[in-house]
Amino acid sequence: MYIEGLIAAPFTALNNDCSINLDAIEKLADFYTANNLAGVFICGTTGESMSLTLAERLEIAERWCKTANKKLKVIVHVGENSIEACKKMSAHAQKSHAYAIGAIAPSFFRPACVDDLVECCSQIASSAPELPFYYYHMPSMTGVNFAMIDFLRKAADKIPNLAGIKYTYEDLMDYYLCRSFENGRFDILFGRDEILLCGLALGAKGAVGSTYNFASGLYHQLINEFKRGNIEKARSLQQKSMEMIKVLASAGCSFLAISKALMKEVSIDCGPVRLPLTKVTDRQYESVIKKLEQIGFFESCTSQASPLKQKTKIDCPISEIKV
Image (cartoon, rainbow, N blue to C red; front, side, top):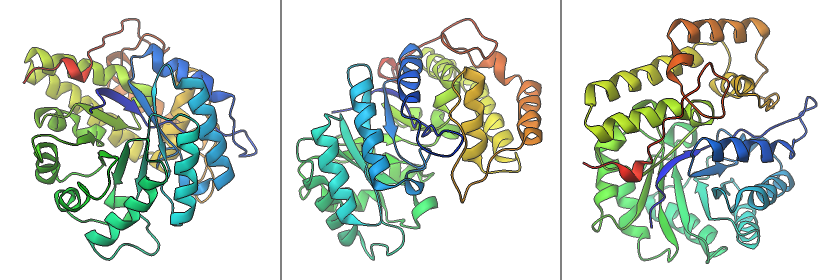
C-alpha cells in the first residue's frame, strides 16, 4: 500500500487567545482538496502537537476525520512521550475512521536501541490494529537516530499493521535502502521539501511537508517537469523551493511561526503559535514577503485556490512519474 502524491502537514489553527480553532479545519480541507493534495498528516511537528493537550489532540483528530475523510487521507499523528497517551490517541483515531496513524519517537526518555523503539511502536500500533501505522523518523527533533533499515528489519514481522515510515531526514542512502527493502514492501514517505527532487529520483511515491500548505503549486510543477524528463527545469524549481525555505528560516523567528503566518497569503488565517514559540512581528512578516517577492516565489507558485498572484493550476500526481 502506497500513498501517492503530496501530503500537507497542516498547521493547528488557533484563535487569538491561543485556544484551538476547529472551524478552520473545513477551510483547510477544502483548500487542500482544491489544490490536488492527497492527504494530511495532522498534529505533527508543523501542527505543534507537543504544545497541545491530549484532549485538544483528540478533538482536532475527530474534526479532521469528520471533515476530510472522504476528500483527503487523514493520517493522525499520535506520538507523545507517554506511550499510554499514544495508545489512547491511536484507539481514538481508529474509532474516528482515520486513514492511518503515525508516531514520532519518545524524546524525553529516549529508546536506547532499535529493539526498544520497535517495542514502543508495537504497543502504539496494536491499539489501532485496523489502521496502517507509520513510524515518524525525525531525529532533528527527537535525537533518536537509528538507521531505519535496521528498524524495518526488526519491525517488519513484529508490527502487523506497519505500513512504513514518514522519513524526515537527509540520509538518502538509508532512505533508499528502506524504499527497496523486501522489494518495496513498505511505504516510505519522503519528508524533506527542500530536497524533494532527490526523493523522486530515488522512487518516492508520496511526500509529506509543511511548505505544501501554501506552495503546493511549486512542487506540482517540479513533479511535472521531473516526469517529463526536464531535469534542469526540475532543478531550478527545487532551487526556488530552497530559496523560499532559506528566506523563511532567516526571518528572525521560528520557521514554524513564519510559515504559519504565511497562510494569510492564501486567505486562511491560522492564528498565532503557542509558547515556547513566539508570534511573528509585523516587521518580520513584511520583510519575508518582500524577500519572497524578490526571488519570484509568488510567480512560480501556481495554484488553483490560492491568491498568491497566480492563475494557472499545474498538477501532476507523483504516481504518474515514470523513471
